[in-house]
Amino acid sequence: MNDKRRISLLFFVLVMIFFYLPIVMLVTLSFNNSKNFLWTGFSLKWYIELFTSSPDLWQAFGRSILIGLTSSVFSVFIATFGAIGIKWYNSRLKNYVKFLNYIPLILPDLIIGVALL
Image 1 (cartoon, rainbow, N blue to C red):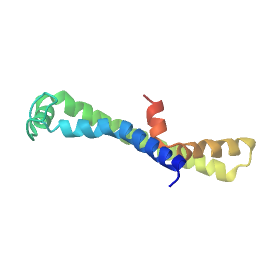
Image 2 (image 1 turned 90 degrees about the vertical axis):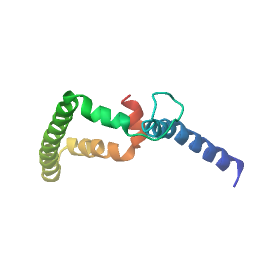
Image 3 (image 1 turned 60 degrees about the vertical axis):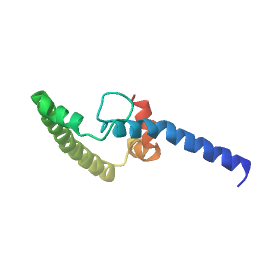
Image 4 (image 1 turned 180 degrees about the vertical axis):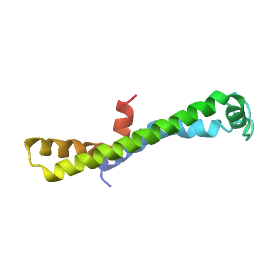
């Protein structure tokens, strides 16, 4: 391996650690027995408290599911009619719509996630 390749591999590994280490730490420490950062033992106490302490949580969860399902149904209808329109009609707008359709496939998910922060 040449030096350029090693440096790029090292940079890639460091960036992946920067992005994913906080997530791994958060999930790991969510099973900690105490509120402190130091590990004192495995426990599901915080998850039990989360899911049993407030009925508002379940109401919010139900609303989130309802909004997700509703937006999915509307998205399917819009996408279906958009695809039919792209297939049947020839216009200058057709190429622009095709380009916009490929943007989510071209951009990596991490870039979109960071951009939405």
